[in-house]
Image 1 (tube, protein in one colour):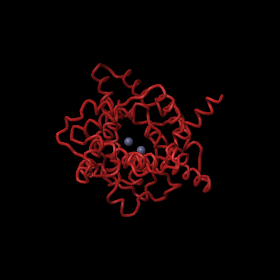
Image 2 (image 1 turned 90 degrees about the horizontal axis):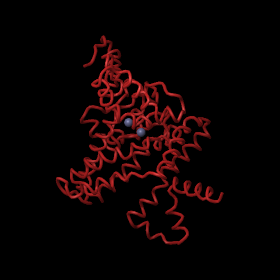
Image 3 (image 1 turned 30 degrees about the vertical axis):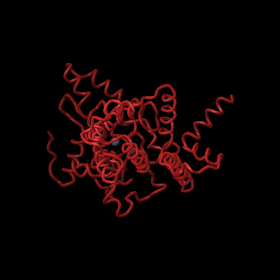
Image 4 (image 1 turned 45 degrees about the vertical axis):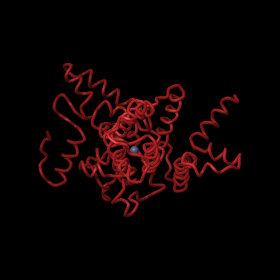
Length: 337
Ligand SMILES: [Zn+2]
Ligand SMILES: [Zn+2]
């Protein structure tokens, strides 16, 4: 029994990231705050505490709905359970493989930091773009898009294999382009914190544009658009902090005030259902592969974008968005290649 209590206490302190603070209170030694590692640990309760405030405000404004938090919560619990038995150190593995093989050597200086961040955003764009455009990778990423509401708990909703897949792509690209591990870890910390914050719900931040910052940064508003299933918003805003690559590749989409965001994925999913959010896309892919005639078609289902069909009747994000835009401008919808 005490084991279970201890486990729950550990999980609680682990989730809120308060272990470091507890140790500092106990010892009265706050020196570690002056070190980068200590500062990083001290900042880790930030997002969980914001999530708590978001929940409380939701309760106060009577907009709190259990089902909006239930699915991400279940996913978090299952992932914690899996990670007790299985930890995949993809970052460490890639560092072992590629460290020292970079084109150049970007160290911890301000100018290399800028370079490193641009490279990191590119690497993130590549991973995230593939997560939306290759059906197999979409199976890994779709769990994050399944919640039909936006709030800070969504930041914890990921398929357990998505992190290693993302880390392999991002770390490899960064290392090969010369970003050294210390710089990489600094960027990953900033990216992780911001990447969590952009999931802030309307209970905490009604207008996610952050004023003029909306012009230079990828804001919660942009990421709300990314999580939307409205045809105009599908497969846009893949960046995390700096929308440079979305601008470069034409995937940047601003939030339109008159268009109400509908969160989730286009497939009808059982609201708040863990199994459907976690395995639903794998199952849908399995059915498509099973039904597809011939080996080539079966294989194409794995690598083509979600919505691709061997019959030629594609319902990919590109087709849906294109049709929507043509209808919006009053032109007859022509098929896209
Ligand atoms: Zn996404
Ligand atoms: Zn997200």
